[in-house]
Amino acid sequence: MIAKILFVLFLMVLLIIVSKQLRFTPKKRNHVEKLVQCANCKTYISGSRAIKRYHSNETIYFCSNKCEREYKQKRKGEKK
Ligand SMILES: [Zn+2]
Image (cartoon, rainbow, N blue to C red):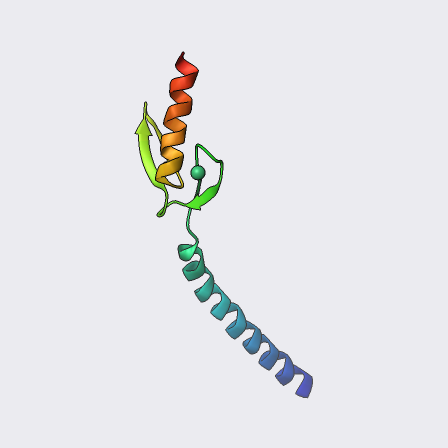
């Protein structure tokens, strides 16, 4: 009889823990930012901080203005 009560209590505690975890995980996932790669130096940066440039139907990301300039200069060099 005591074993049954303990088992039920154990199940209740388990349910509380599981429900708490289920409530917290979606919130954490929303805070994880999408990472994008800098086209010039290949560094990964968060999408909100990256400089976005649209070039022939694709989006190019840069970590800084300096990288954008360097990338453009490289492209000019390739065309020659
Ligand atoms: Zn960069």
